[in-house]
Figure 1 (cartoon, rainbow over the protein chains, first blue to last red):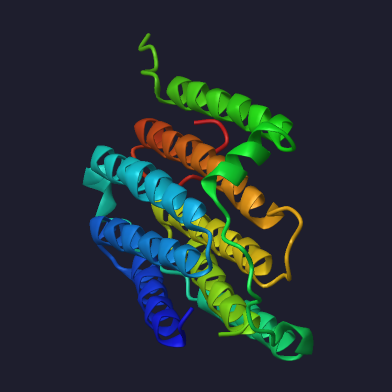
Figure 2 (spheres, chains in turn yellow, cyan):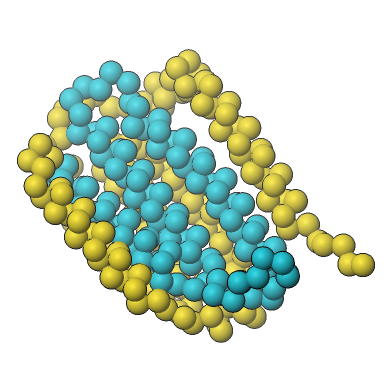
Length: 161
Length: 102
């Protein structure tokens, strides 16, 4: 885990996040959003959670980013007109960041280096999902089904009387 | 690279998401901000898992996997709601959505 790689990924991710939050054109913001998730996946790879990094790429760049692009295209002719920007949000975000950083700088137990741990294999994750985490897995399955059916019902054409 | 640096990056990401959710008036930007905040929380879970000495179970990783699944469900429903609201009100500006019965 090199510090150089970490710094580069951190700068890239934060720049992409800022771009996604502030760019005027929605399509550019959606692309920066995808780049930001690529950066977060790189963080996961760097921290040794390769499986989560891959899942993140599949789910966010493969599915959520595409969904966002579709939504932008479906609501297009309105997109360029919504230009308001509320500056009080900047104040709140900076205040929250200041508070969090202050708390972390004053916690000495956080200044630790990563210990040597044995790599987490997909085999082990699958085993855990099928034994100790089987109820959460089933609940998430039911939740995803319900969410997809709900999303479909939401976007069904309204009947015109 | 210490735990505190990872947490600072994650906090910065969370605050950018908060900024997007609070400042932008377009509904899709608010969803993007919420997704960013969830990703920052996932980063925290993974970081705390990685910096613990020999964890018996990779709980942080499992929580992150479930959080990703739930975030995907939330994104699907949220974007469907944006489309439904757009059809009804012909706008996605959250400042103009001020009627309960329309």
